[in-house]
Image (cartoon, rainbow, N blue to C red):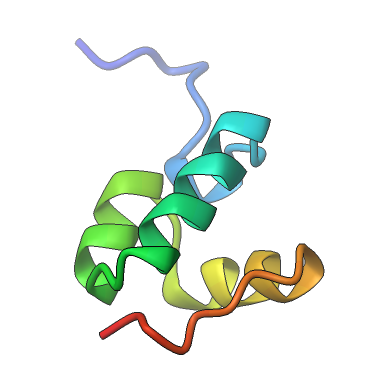
Length: 61
C-alpha cells in the first residue's frame, strides 16, 4: 500500500545531492530521459534548476 502522506515526485524539493547528480550527469552528456528518471523531475524543472545554478545542459542529448 502506498503511503498516502508521501509527496509526488514533482513536489519533492531539490536536495544538494540532486544538484550534485545534475551537475555530474550533465557534464557526462547523459540523455534527458536518464536525467528525468534519475532525478525524478520534469525536463522543465531540470532546465530551471540548471539555469539557477549555472549548470550547462548543452551536452545533454
